[in-house]
Length: 235
Image: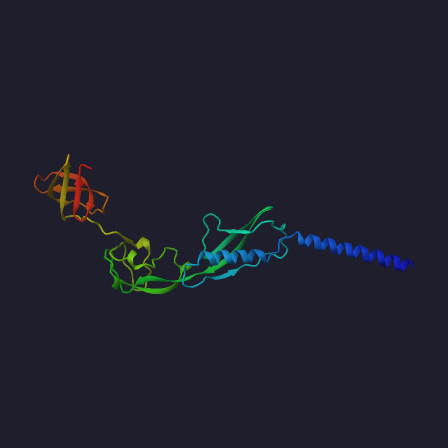
């Protein structure tokens, strides 16, 4: 009888322990939810691309214990973080408040524009100067272009070998006025417009100030470039 009583006591204690363990386990956040949220977040970040990103997540420590979130988990990029290459993605719970970070490696491929042949510095780009090529974007810290309209008519700041990526920083809007060119000087007086010819003393783009020598008076004046070969003084 004593043995039976002790056995019942052990079974009772054991069942209570299992119930407590189950209750404690139900109060914890399932760790599998976190990578699911991170993966969905990163996929959405690149949903406009022709190829989905290749995402590899670093496993969380299985010993991690987080209180179960009573609201939807929210993934976010920390300040200054990237959504390609090696990144740390944040996941936060608003209630109860906690935040965790998961390491990820994101490979993103896209078709970008590269030089189709050697391009000299100062060249004005045309459609024949570049070609599309599939590249992995995390290997392009200097940026890239995918839209040919952003390159055609632009001037190269530097020489590029064939196959090199044409980044936004490698091009500029060509000057509307070049040093030594004959330009039209425009002066406005009330409702009147007076024009004359002048020689630009430096290169300048639209909206920039430039010094010009008036051909008639040989006087040097300063004005703002308003159009190709056109400078307005007195503005």
